[in-house]
Length: 450
Ligand code: PFF
Image (cartoon, rainbow, N blue to C red; front, side, top):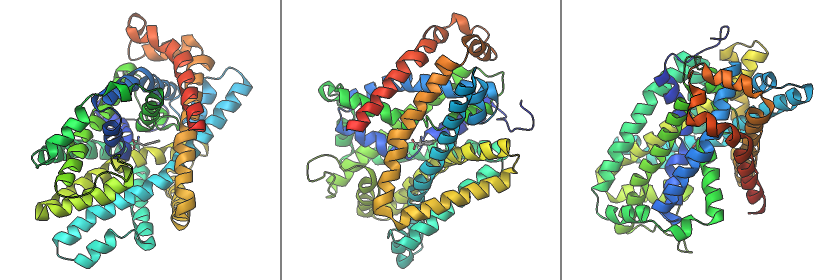
């Protein structure tokens, strides 16, 4: 363990924290509808393949770099560099990474705040306070600001408690709660009338749609966002791992958990949409495609919950509770990236660093809320569509080209002495050198012209 840095106390703690970062709003509201509109089971297959063949190697690059340096991304990229130029570009990449992590958090926390508000609205409704319930679902400025700040305060409180007492402890509690909640919701939704049609739409394979080049690139973009790649969250979590851990195995488990939760969420969201249709709620847009994203979450599903009476309020609470947890375990990983940098580089105290950086992010979040129409979409696009793939590209280049192969092998051997004999060492090094950077550039080029 490095100096006085935090460390995950167990493999389970790490897996919960890293999959907590990966499993977020993207998995539950993004993946299912994307799959349904793009070839169902065929899309699922493409997504699984891409997650394991391309996102997993990129995830490994971050985990290995982080564990090797046992430090933040700026120092980690500097450390593997052989020249001043490479060290300088590495440091700039790390700084860009934590800036982007902070920017993602500033819009993510707004959406997460809505989830918390909708969750509490169900409680207000159950207790008969209709006025409060409608305010909570109203999208007014003050409600938005209040819940943005509340959600960020929760995130800051967890991060400021440290790696073991904050991030690990809360991920260990929240992730099992998320899984149980999701399973309960799936089981309930599948009993409702209309659910089976949704299941068919979700699972009917249509290869003609899923195999288009555009779609494969889209699926890859989602896999990158979904595994939280490119901004240094996985690098920093890797840096808190002990040298005894087998990295390829742990990265594989995190990828598997992330993909499984996305797939499982499909068994809830798609059937729920067709239950809604059965109950008279519109689930298609004017152009005939399934409604997705914010309209799905904040309009279609609440309308569905309203059609099932009292149980609907309980289901609504459970659903938004699930979304809030998924968002919280992701947002703590985003805040940890700049906090780790400031505490390590400037010897700042963690508690103060978390509150000051959190405060800056809250200010940006408020600025977005005040100029929602111009800023929200812009920041989402700049960070997730352009910055994440580009920075992911840089991490792969550093792991594959800049870092000396021998030193990298030694790092992997630490928790996996026979690594050279396994498949991982035969495939991964050239994957991360050639295949990953090329594919990421492909996504990037595509997103420029899309
Ligand atoms: N992986 C998260 C999701 O699927 O919602 C989003 C995310 C988390 C992106 C952390 C970036 C990040 F650093």
